[in-house]
Amino acid sequence: MKPKRTILCVDDNEQSLSHRKIVLETRGYRVSAFARGEDALQRFLEGGIDLVIADMAMPGLDGPQLIAKIKEASPATPAILISSKVRVYDHDSQADVFLTKGMYSPADLLERVRLLLMRKRGPKRLPQRPAPVAGGVVVA
Image (cartoon, rainbow, N blue to C red):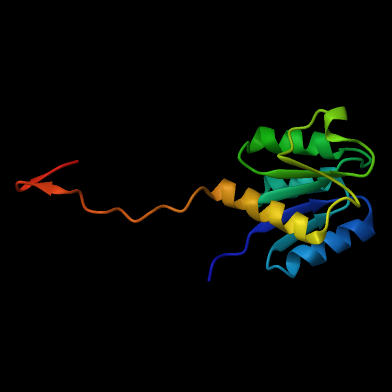
């Protein structure tokens, strides 16, 4: 059985956070959910987080600031930024994916998560085949 991936979810809207958490957990992901960016950053720095999903507009440390700090600590960690008000080209962000609230389905979110985690893990390695032998000499 493959190990579960841990996703850090951050949103100051409890209903959105709860909905996202349920969607991800029903697909077998572990979810660490936080309403404040500062708390989420502290949890991230403890380790073991495979992907981050953050709301853009939050009091204190907002989504883009949180993602910037996470990318500074771990550039390979994929991040999804979700917003209801700002289009991606209106705001500078280091997020790998930008989703607009109300414009994506749970299936879209799950597919983005799957693809980002696959990209982080890298392609599956093909089994090594023995090198061809030419006249009793191994060709490398």
